[in-house]
Amino acid sequence: MVVSLTLSLVALRTGLVLRRARLRRQPAPRETRATHIKIAKIAVVMLLVGFVSGPLSTWFLRGWTPFDTFHGLTGGIAGVLFALTGARGRALELGPARGGKNDPATRDMHAILALASVGFGAVAAFAGFVLLP
Image (cartoon, rainbow, N blue to C red; front, side, top):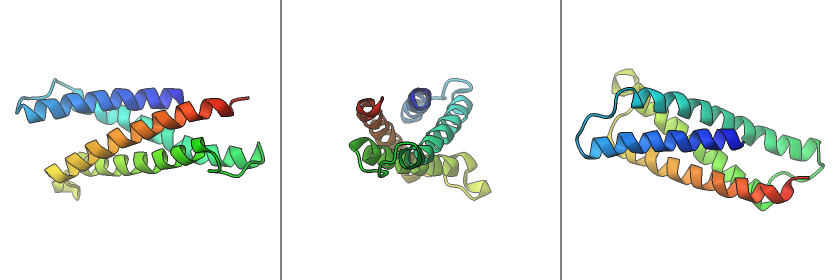
């Protein structure tokens, strides 16, 4: 999960570069959008695999009740937020020509969800340290 959270931070950083360029009405650095999309897709998939495998390992390997800890609660919220961020990002990637969206409201929602998901992911990571054997 540390690797996937690190990738999500890299994706967040490249997304902020894109946003800053758009707000300044300047072209984004070359290949930044492609890099952002590539890294973000990998991070979201890895995080969602962790989101699914965490409760399963809690139940089957430790005999605990899933989502019964602060780590489980914040991890669950982070998982949902990452899924929503990915969905908004996919709509932006597709664009209107292919059934997606590329309006300011979608971009803003993607940005807000990304910040929230990384924040909750970080809190979940720190909360999980006490659960380590």
